[in-house]
Image 1 (cartoon, rainbow, N blue to C red):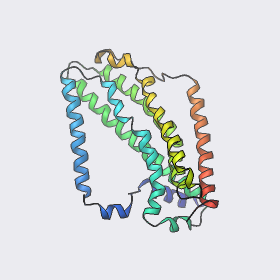
Image 2: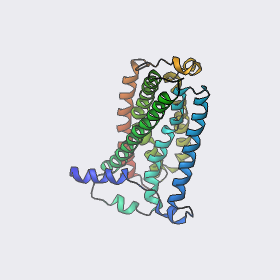
Image 3: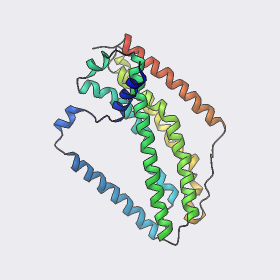
Image 4: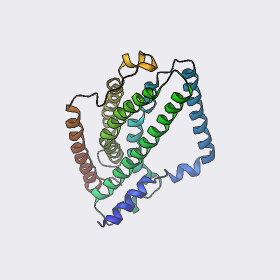
Length: 258
């Protein structure tokens, strides 16, 4: 496949806008959805600011709001395939003159790049918020900002590093539901969702409970607070990701049930 064509496929997945049918059925316009999101965002910022003014905000705990990222990227992967069936574009997608592996890889890469962009935006926004707190409120300092940013990098590195496998599993789950292996779908959902629940134990490693309970001015974040086995485990997860994607492509090629 020409590299320019592959980039276009990835760009298409990166800009994925969801199901056309759901959009036509929805009675809520995009502007209203945006307004709802802004109201929630303002409410969260307002609540955090209230606690900060009263010197009860443990700034490192703000990163807990990103704990939903692993589930989010799983359903991004799942939805990227489901969208083809909901939009009745699966025929067009599958008849493209490219290998099934390339088609699956393009979806996977587009979603991962979308996640990385989201991680950068969230990191910048939250870091800027804590920086403003340190400049306005005497209870917080630039050292607090530095500790907050280090903690965020530690946690978001885990999210970015293990999300390729999570995305691949989401794509696989959706393909299984449209293959001859469909009877296994309930088991697959139970196994994958149980595995994802383990992700919620990881923040305790990055942000230990005793750190949360300390005063905001005494945070001391640590670069790479993990065992050195973690890079090996992350590398193995990337190998597993490739295997999952190849198996997904095999299902598309040989086991699809239309």
